[in-house]
Amino acid sequence: MSRAAKVWAALWAVYLIWGSTCLAIAVAIETLPTLLAVSTRFVAAGAIMAAVVARPGGSMRVPVRAAASCVVIGCLLPGANAVLFFAEHDVPTGLASLIIASVPLWVMVLRLGVARERLPWQVLAGVGVGFAGVAVLAQPSGGAKAYGIALCVLSAVMWATGSFLSSRLPLPADSFVATSFEMLAGGLILLPIGLATTHPHFSQFSGRSIFGFFYLVTFGSVIGYTAYVWLLDNAPLGKVATYAYVNPVVAIALGVIVLHESLTWTIALGAVLVLACVAVVVRRESELAPGLADDAKPVPIGEAT
Image 1 (cartoon, rainbow, N blue to C red):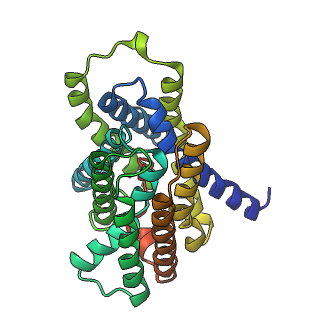
Image 2: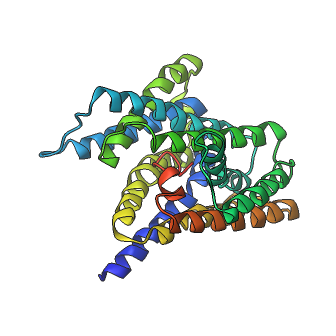
């Protein structure tokens, strides 16, 4: 297989896998306890990645400061995913994915307001119009409830904050080591809460939900992230960053086809505004690297999903 073919194979893997995680979440929480499902997902995925990293010749040793930073990021990113798990009880997967797609816009707000960076006018315009799209999406429609939409927005803000801090805190140099620590930290913090608040009856877990859970652990977290990290080293940044506005399209299509979700005019209008502006922001920032693609580099817990 040629190098170009490998790049496109990895890119489509990221498109399809991360685009399908909202659907997998919805399927998993049909019968699995929500908080227990999200916490065990990260513990399992983190353990798998740690085992791979610690194979003969590898090492999971990191400085104390870097480990502490991983705990902070782990609280934000898995926490954001946990919020999304709860949100999907009341929000269709397509709409949830579109609101989560606003993460790059929130990162720009943090860069502008917290880091006091000077951003190109194209980025500022894109952020402004993009949030107009988020406002359109925030109107309950297509079976969504206001409570669930608010949780989706909160998840996007938490994800953006974790992404913003990940480029400013001392993290392990190896991305896989950092991600392993982050997932384990987030999962282990959430797990006791999940166990204390849930009394699972395993006989009630459907095969469909169990499949969704294992899909999130293996494909969503491990395989999707491996493909993404490989792309960062082997493909142009602008091409890799296209996942940010392709994934929601995949999520919407899967929601309509598999879960028979409705696609309203409100959602369609909001989708056009948000995705077009995210495309402008991501492309403009990738041309000025280090930019958005570095600040908002996703880890397998999101896929922002």
